[in-house]
Structure formats: structure tokens, C-alpha cells
Length: 270
Length: 300
Image (tube, rainbow over all chains, first blue to last red; front, side):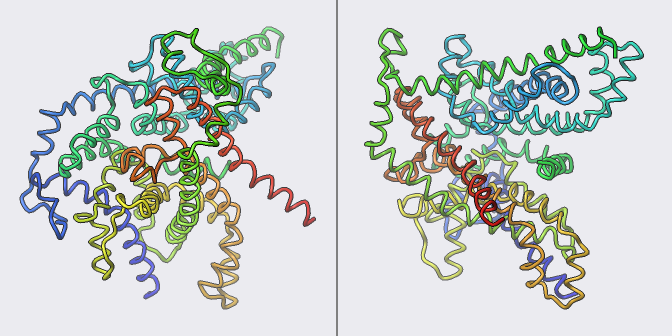
């Protein structure tokens, strides 16, 4: 019983240290400007205020960045699903020449980090005229190989007889995909959507490269740029960090079973 | 199945995969190959204005990089990140996984979510938070050190401490993911084996050493490889926390690629940096597997 208590206490202490930076971020964001810069560092706002958030949204245009981030992440999610779901299913279940070779090639491509091609991709998009636009930010999310394998992995478990039965009933390949496969794939769809949404929300390097117009900035890019101008304003920067990361933290909390379950399933199978 | 059905399935196979394959070819494969080509040219701001200024220079960019002290600093820094980061991430994530997997611990799902939260949080936002946590005078880290009677450290301002400081942040940010890998491995340890050892009188430590640890050796390798790869891809961390400073002590390979390419528009040099980065990551991913295979072949 004592061992049980001790282990639980250890886990709680570990968790408290892990969460401390995030809790401190929220706490400081509610302090009066200048209050955090004292010694000893205050942990709780002495005189809580929303002034930092007001400053962010009224003077720094945080509302526009929030809208940019929401739009880009939503579009990235929808587009990634549109491109990935049919491909993942086709690679798992449809028999067509070249399928095995394509799957093996894609598997090898997984070893290549996306950053390697960033400079030429920038030049390519510049030539097409997509630099400094939402479309430019979204482009890498169309080419998500990991997502294809996530869907393929899940689709492999669909019994062939089910598809055959639908075909014998006269369903076209599209009908089979739309009405038989997609409903079964629902858990994979949810996991993939969550990954892409969080990934595109948190992405920094590519939006930083592709967006030069301040008005188009996503939250991380805007926050990094604000950090270079207002480094001394700890409370303001913490409020900016809250606005940037709390939406995805809440999303994760709401769907954590899905998220951790998806990751665990992937790593067991892989 | 009839012939028309087979044809329909073939056509659907290509139609369903074509959009994704086209996007991968255009926005992933093509740029990757173009990076190799670009690294053999002197593509710079003049070529950006007028492509006729472009010249092939062979391996000159690579030669220049080898002689560039900044490039060697970036490589050295990245190696230092790896040396510090791999043991740290392995230790912390394994400890977290063992705690979360231990049946005697209450509220395990709660701790699991807590340990995982930093991994989902936005990198830039948490890097900003840590920049202030590590503040010499007002930061909580130095305050805690002071409580232990230790002198304050100028974490991000002292070239000797900047890399350990950023490594600390990276480990905090990413150990939750590594924990899941360990957790998946731990769950493959048969409960009966653990029970049998317990009945035979093996203590907690003995069971950990002889039952649990052997089962997670492959997971440790995987976590180490993934951490090495992640360390080679550090960019936002130094960009936000130190801007590569102080005195370029935290500039990474990817940071150098960004600066060469998008700050100075030396895209040829930047592409050469990208290719070197690629070779390093490929080596980190493939060499351990190769070594393991050789080692097994020699033992059998």
C-alpha cells in the first residue's frame, strides 16, 4: 500500500513538472504588464487581468492570425483527407498493375524528410505564383505519405468478401468506396484528420518561408515575429502563446483517446 | 469476377491513387531531386532575377561548405544536441512509460495525458514559454536551482549552456511520444512472466532488469534513432529561443539551410546543406539497422 502510494506520488510529481511550463504560461498571461519580471518570480497573478489579451487582439491583430490558422488547418485537413483516403484504400484493396511497386517506392520515400526539398519547392511555387498565399502553405499537406499508409493499414483489415458482395450487387467502384469503405474507415479518418489539423496548426518552418505578407501569417509565425519585437513583454508573449497553443491542447484533451490510441496502434503494427 | 469488373477495378485503382501520387511527384519527389541538382549550381539572387545567370559549378558548393567554419559549427552543434538529447529522451521517456504502465500506480490515464500534452502543444508557443522559464534573473528554472542552493545559470546567453538548455526543452517537448513507443513495447511483456518472477521472489528492480528491459531493447533503438533524426531537424527551437546565438553556438544544420537559402538567397549553397542533412538523416536511419543485421549474422 505504501509502495502504491509512493509510485502514484512519483507519477503525480513527474506530471506536475511536465505541466508546470504550460500552467505557468496561463498564469503569467493573466498578470499585469511588468509583474512577471520580479524576483522571486511570481507563480500566481496578484491582480488578474485580461489586458494582455486585449492588447493582442486590439493592437496586434491576433484575431486575424487566429482566423488564418483556423482556415489553413481546416483546409489542410479537408484536402489531406480528399487526397489520402482514396489512395490509401486503393493501395490496400484494389488490384491494379504497378500497385506493389508504387507502395514500395512510397515506403522508401518515407525516409526523406520534407525539409530537403524546401528550397526547390519554394522556387517551384514561385514559378506557379503560389508563394505568399494560403495555397502555398497547403501544398505540402497534399503529399502526405504517412497519411496514405495510415489509411492503407486500416483498410487492409476490410474483408474482401464485403467489397465483392457490393460489386455483385451492381455497385460501381466509386459506390463501393463511398458507401462501404468510407463508413468502415471512420476511425482512421478521425485519427488522420486530427493529426493533419494539429500538424498544420503547429507547423512553423514552411509557413515562415512561404508567407511574406504579415496579414497572411499563421499564429506560430506571428508569435515568433512578435517575440522578436516585444521580447521584454513577458505577459504579452505568454498571452500570445496561450492563444496559439490552447486551441490544439483543448482539441487534444477532448480527443485524447483517439489520438493516443491511433499512435499506439500505429507503433504496435509498425 | 468478370472481365469488365477487373477492368473497372484497375481503372479505379489508378484513378483513386492518381491525385495523391501526382501531388507527391510534384511537391515532394520533384523538389527533392531538384535539391540535388540545385546543389551543383551557383543559384543565387542574380539567378533568381534572371535564370541566365545560373552556372553549373559541380561539387564546388560542397567544397566550400567543408571549408566553412560556420558549417562545421552547425554540424558540431547538431552532434552535441544528439549526444545530450538521446540519453536524456531515452531515460525520461522510459521512466514515464514504466510509471504509466505500473499497475500499482493510480489514475494512470491522467498521467499519460499529462506526459503527452507537451508533444501536442505548439512548438513555437512552448519555445517562447521556455525562453522565459530559462531567463537568468526571473526564470523559474534558475529559481528552482536557487532553492537547491545552486548558482543561477545564463542558460540562453552563455555559449556553453545554450545547447544543454535547448536540449532540455526538446526533451520536455518530445518525451511523450517516445513514452508511447516504450509503452507499446512494455505492453508486449507477458504479465505471466512478470507474475512468475514475482512469485519466485524477484524484487521490483530485479524484475525491471531481467523481465522488462530485455523486452524494450528494440524500442530503445527506435527511440534513439527517432531522437537523432529529430535533433538533425531542429530549427524553430534555436530560431525562437536564441536566433542561433549566442556567437552561433546554437546554429543547426537546418538553420544554416534556412539562412543560406532564404536569408541570403544562396540557394545553391542552401541546397548543398540540405543534401548533407539528408545524407546524415539517412545514415542515422539505416546504419543502426545494418549494424544490427551484421551483428545478428555474426552471432548465428
